[in-house]
Length: 354
Ligand SMILES: [Zn+2]
Image 1 (cartoon, rainbow, N blue to C red):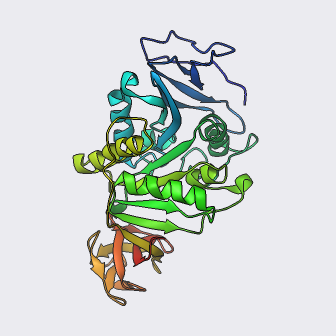
Image 2: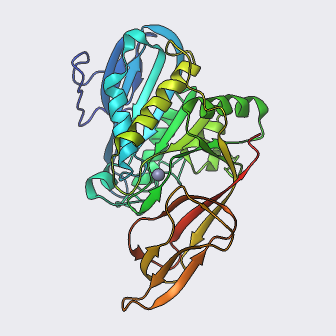
Image 3: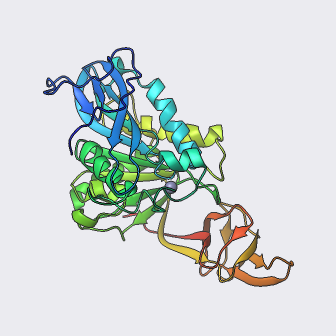
């Protein structure tokens, strides 16, 4: 993908506008229009040109450590209303000090700008597509696909490790958890398992269902793993809130992984005894109407326990959802709006984490 220097905003004082030499020296690391020399921080944009629909500009920051080390990508805002995760990356852009860093951190705080600005959950309102389901993207696709192609080429292919941050969407009352993508490649899986333990969230979903084909990787984490790069996905946040506790969990988790990767001094804060979730049940509504939850996020439910019910617009119960298995309520619907087929709760069943 050609690097386009149209509509550039270089926000860092250390980098002049329209930064990015044609042939960067080895000390300079460039993503989109963000070019950081060794020991510097730079911000810029991935410019997605217009195609069958409008173009967009995805903000990106590069923190280039004074010492050498791996490249870690931190990405949030594929779902632009998962605010806690976006706030976490925003905080990290300010906090990371290139003088203390070994290696390079590429931070993308907001992939789905139109979702954030329009307060639209789950999808990019420009084309109605989830920005975590259409990787690795395509040049002749709609905005989501063109943007994800740029993410694949400029961020995934340039990094050694990746963390995808999410935060419970506007309609999800969610308890924090992480995903460990188990690919079957022992070396890769061992590396990502160390990352997810270092991140520190105490509930970890073992994701064994991710695509294995790099050409149709769908998710950001599997776009990394199918290219041989250890990656994890983490979630903290819920229902439009920016709870300091959720933001702290995400910020501290990223810093702890950076210690585990020897990019920062100090020891990682490893979670010792996480609950591993080996089966996920997405419970869908059988009816359209008004949702009334009967469980709280994070609670344990028995098989058959009522999770909530849906009434019609006159208050008559038309559907009652029950837990298909005993497990943990990872999230439950946070708002009354409910359409037939929508997920109203996610139940995680604990199992072995190896
Ligand atoms: Zn998300």
